[in-house]
Amino acid sequence: MNEQTTDAAVKADIEAEARVREYYEVNTRLFLRFGFERETMTIHRAVWAKGIWHRRDALNYTNQLALDAMREGIGDGPAEVIDLGCGVGGSLLYYAGRTPENWRGVGVTISPSQARTAMRNAVARRFHHRLKFIEASYLDLPVPPGFDAAVAIESLIHASDLGQALREAARVLRPGGRLVVIDDFLLFPPPADATPWWRGFRGYWHANSPRSVDDFAALAASAGLRLIERRDLTSNLRLIWLPKWLANAMLRVGLALPRSLPLVESQVGGLALQTGYLDGWLEYAFLVFEKAGGDAPEAALQPAGQAAQK
Picture 1 (cartoon, rainbow, N blue to C red):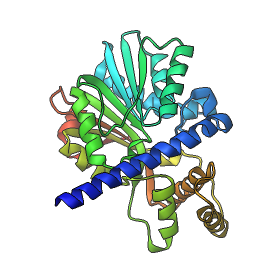
Picture 2 (picture 1 turned 180 degrees about the vertical axis):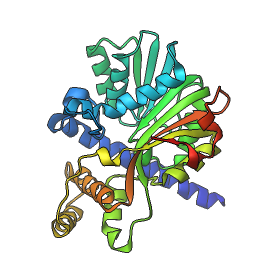
Picture 3 (picture 1 turned 45 degrees about the vertical axis):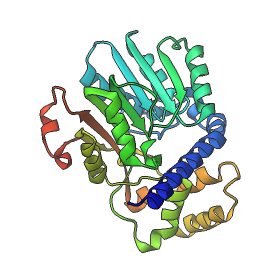
Picture 4 (picture 1 turned 120 degrees about the vertical axis):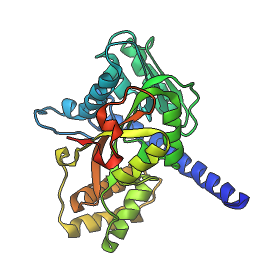
């Protein structure tokens, strides 16, 4: 790769990250004001798994999955956890309310307003002595190595350079530390007639790094992270089915509207996301990785594609 190509790639990464930052700067307050996120401060998908009857529990389902996976690797001792794409702090606040005082957390977000809101939330819930939130990119984390666990819920799909994001996650983890990822993954390339939907997903949902689970795991393995568990959560999402003609009409209208209008990107991107699930080219998956060097469970010795599935 020549210098000119490298410069162009760096510029593209910077521009992609700036668009994601602006997306959350514009939309976070609207999500919190009009959505169901106000109660949990969790800007994540609601997962209606077996035994989940209330929306609060559905919104926190991924938080509990991540907490269980981290506890399995950490045990009952003191822990340092980093949230890569922490939003307004909902996940770390959830963990802090269910773990001993010797658990500490750092939340990272590229949105300055999210970082400020997250810190206010920590102060309001009296967890500010255990949690801190910083404005930074997970492509260049301003923290030293040594974290026991890292979590990334619906955030790495936005990475302009997924390989670098995974390398940074591996760098800050201690040997044997765990990375928990819950995100959208490709099952297969969308068909030709889904091109407008692909445009909506990539451009309006800011899906800068769409990968299959296997491709994602291979990239993680090259960073020193071995997949030890995978689980498909797609069937636990409550999707809104629309007749194709209506969905296509809504997409055309959305794509024609100025992207600068509040909620246009989130609505168009969300519609494309649901279409990807319903048409079967996207899945919502839970993945657990372990950094080499610890006491790896037996599953960690298997090829990525053979990691334990539940």
